[in-house]
Amino acid sequence: MTTVSESFETSVAVTGLPSHDECRAARDRVTESAGFRSAPRLAAFLSFVIEAALSGRSETLKAYTIAVGALGRSEDFNPATDAIVRVEAGRLRTALSRYYADEGTGDPIAITLPCGRYVPEFGWRVATEAVDAVVDLSAFRRVAHQNRALRAQHQQLRAVLKRNIEIFMANLRVLEKSVAAALSHSSPKDAPAGIGPAPGQRLPARRR
Image (cartoon, rainbow, N blue to C red; front, side):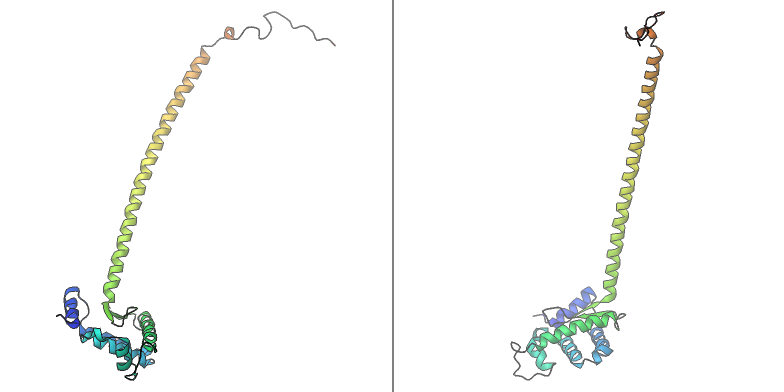
């Protein structure tokens, strides 16, 4: 049966995860930081779970073993009535986040403690940033492609509009010529009868 430690070594070789020595060095950088030096219980908690995970004993990382092995509780510790491990695990997660946002900004390895578990995880922060950069570049390329498509549509619409205006102006010119021709061929005799006095006829004077 493959042990947790052997699985970890395989993951390192296949995916390029940090080695055991690199993980221990990352742990030392964290526990020696100012934030953890002032919180020895959190440093002990972190060191205990990291060493257990790297030694292939991840399955033993339960509330009882952490309380007795890292937090100084006696062997009659009862996790059902004492929530110290859950409380300290929450504080540890917060302290780790604070460390990587401040003193550990340039640390190449990130140590995390997933919620609901006490087995730590390790990862290259540089790799994460590279993935973020690739994602950002992909998003930029998508936006650029959309902009090119919009510009092409805009040019097509402008061409259609220009063509429609040319057709409208041509029809307008034809209409103007037709109206002018019709007016040039019309004469006074074409006016309807009964409108205006006959030639030489004077209108009767108005009575006062």
